[in-house]
Length: 281
Length: 201
Image (cartoon, rainbow over all chains, first blue to last red):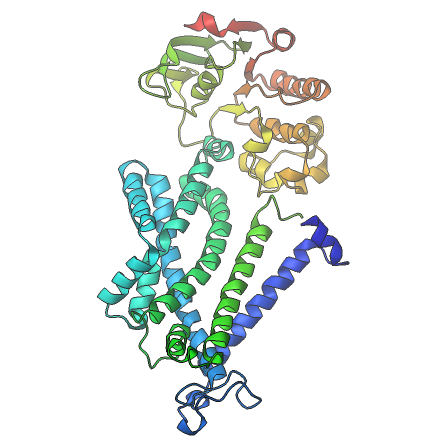
């Protein structure tokens, strides 16, 4: 850390982290907004232009129906972002509720929650995800709920551990002895401690959600084939990659990886910024 | 008796009792030192006396009444590790304000510099932080202080300073004291009576 800090003169680690985070957020927000507002005619079917390799007119090339891959990717990624965001929010709320209540209530409830957590973590995510998505009739709703219901356990465990540790800490117990109410302790002591863990948890959940959404869609259990989504694009590309249409898989794949990595950058930097023991670096 | 423990039984698991029928009392105007080997249950007993732990049997009486559970407890504790006893996310001003808001004169008496109030715990030394913990425990409603090895982590000079500050306040306001310690010398210097843990059971 300190070695790298020296190479950027004039900027300390903290400002660099903030720059990383801002760049990543701005990029992802741009993709999201652009993709949502994009006119569908930009990636409309034009059979005359099929299988054009990357060129000035179509920087990512076109596919077997002559659709512009660049605009399709942007649109697909923004779809993935929406699904990822919704899924992370749902699962983080589940995690927050279960995590806090299982630490506070304890006893049998705590054991039951932990058993659910172990159960969900023991099964491979993808299998469970396919099952849930299939049962809910595929489509955006199926994928979203599938991702949401499979990704809560890690965050639940984090939140639960955090609250448990805090509840037995000397300053919380001292606060009770100074006549403070449970509500006061929860709002002033516990909540501010859980919030950073929770925020970082959401952000780090995000890349998982997007990856899994794409994976399920790629396997054909997710979004329908007509929706532009990275998973759909990649599974279509599989059919043409053997005939040398490399651009169909490469660019969408790179965009997906870039989005996932950027979320990771945001999460990791946020974690370092919000953690008191590393915030001063 | 100011603070009294009657037939206290306590164990961290059901099969093994650490405290088995402890009777202990501290009279008005007394300063008592509790001495015993590591792991014998001194801290457990002091946590029970301060109401942090509930004994499995027996009762703790303060001024012949049970300790209040919802309001400010007249028996306050000062711990061995000040850095664990304050919220690392709060400035020391808020930490102090959680108990009470002392005036400048009191802070000066406690050897707390005004600029420390606007710092975070990580920006203070252990001795500086322990002064805050002592100051916090010395709120106006406090009638009794349990110091659980409160100076063990500090160097000799800081130890002496903190105990001197503490004793001055305690004597001025007629507050009771139970000092849990390993040091016989400290106990003889600070307290009016020395109790060995073994004598209690």
